Amino acid sequence: MPEIPDLEAIRHYLMPRLGGLTVARAAAPIPWLVRTGAADLQTLVGHQFGEVHRLGKFLLFFVDDGRILVVNPMLTGRFHWVEQDAKQPAMLGVVLGFDDGHELRYSDQRRMGRWYLAPDAASIGTVPQMEKLGPDVMGLEEEPFVAMMRSRRGQVKNTLTNQEVMAGIGNAYSDEILWEAGIHPHRKGSTLEEADWRRVFRAMRSVLEDAIRVVDETVQAEGLGRKEEWRQHLRVHRRAGGPCPRCGGEVRGQTRGGSETNYCVTCQPLFT
Ligand SMILES: [Zn+2]
Figure 1 (spheres, rainbow, N blue to C red):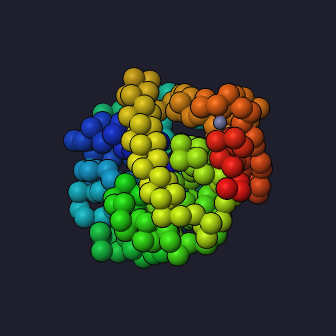
Figure 2 (cartoon, rainbow, N blue to C red):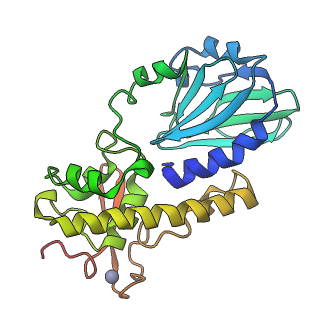
């Protein structure tokens, strides 16, 4: 699932490439992905995109007439920037063709992604899921974070990944952040001291800033295609059975509802 570092890299990659190009064709081979109506997509023809922003796990493509194309790739949405005669990916969901022969393609194995065309910036708050979106993680400061977390009693991992609490962190980076902070993902918020939350905040900053840099370098060098490389730097997520990079102990894994949680029992004790 794309999280902050992945989406930042995608937007850095696409923004300069889209600049100055005009949409020549638009199609939605999987029409229901475009929640505001696949026919709506046709109204992009003749227009250009300006800035590409990220808010939580959403990408926002600003259209030259003030509209905003809002995309949430959910679990398996992927972007492709290719020449129009390039081989089509499986589960091709949306295609925007540009006047220089490039195509921005979106494929989605599980077809869960969501596209919306919002009439203006003021209305993006009405996009489903965005209505209740918490503050973006990268804009959070330590004091408000600590103040906000002290009333959170549920399991720490659930809190970090709850988009209504704060937006942008998912399954992979919550594992990385909690490993860095030495906090077990299933610890109840009510058992954490203020110093623990401060450690979580600093880990959140350092893990995400490092990952943004690493993923960005990979994507700038390799393009959007080789997504398996985007997660090679992770230290515990999807590393069950391997050694903890800090203590050498075994990284554990638990799967719940199809998503895996990984941690080191030595570095991240459940009971303190
Ligand atoms: Zn360890």
